[in-house]
Image: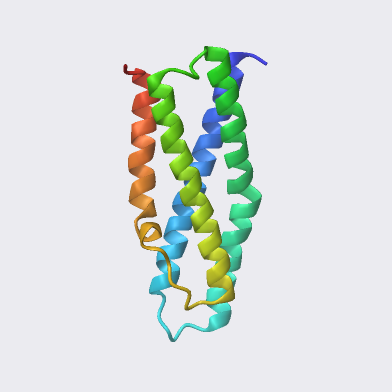
Length: 143
């Protein structure tokens, strides 16, 4: 497949995945701030919807991000480039945050009083800052 097509699909997958990570950050924040008077069934429905979106959209997009990203890196011969290695570290961190978010949503759906790890309370801003750094690395290719 042509490099530009792979790049376009990679970018679409990145946008979908990052959108899902941001939605999950909002879902976790909202869930932890919902009033106690809200019926448990409504809280549960909200969590189930967020988890379904994650499983059906965000997770597959993450898989495509990794597959297409590594393919592009091999095609571009960037596997040892410093900018790529930094990008790889950031994407690995974002993947870990996504995994933590998925686990937190699962635990919250089983136990609404589950304590959320502190890093997930700021996962939205972490995601935005990380994506800005990745965009700079990919476009400018410093070093």
